[in-house]
Image (cartoon, rainbow, N blue to C red; front, side):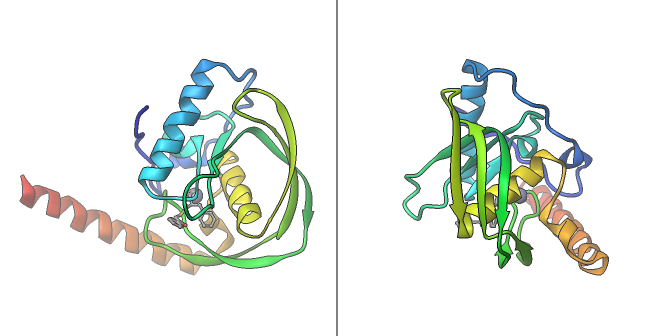
Length: 174
Ligand code: K1U
Ligand code: ZN
């Protein structure tokens, strides 16, 4: 297993669309395992393959407090969206930023699991929000795209400032 590097906004690779996975083989299972390790280490409640520079339709999620309910979804597709919920969202690719986003609060989806078996499931609340957030990543979309241009500009500036101070702190350590 390995902890993978997470791409950070405004990296243009986060805008690439992921390709459908033809078959869940050992390579995809290894990717899933590495993505779980990366998500738990970060820590986060979800991660999409695009965030670790892999452009295939794979997401992992675990919203449980004790981190015991891993859910890996390959080629996830939402088939039902119901209701609207506004929730604070964060993103491992946009560190330190939390903003309210409106999304469906109940969904049905189909996907393949880690064994390549086709599944259908319902999700609501935080799980539904997190799955929608991760599927957006597979389509090159970020939660900040739902915000105003002004808010996005402020976020860009804040992250750039943070990157400059992190780089100068790392130079001091050396
Ligand atoms: O996709 C990602 O970048 C992961 C992201 C998922 C997400 C969070 C909140 C709403 C929708 C989707 C995160 O996990 S950000 C970190 C976070 O929310 C968190 C981290 C540790 C414990 C609890 C939450
Ligand atoms: Zn994200």
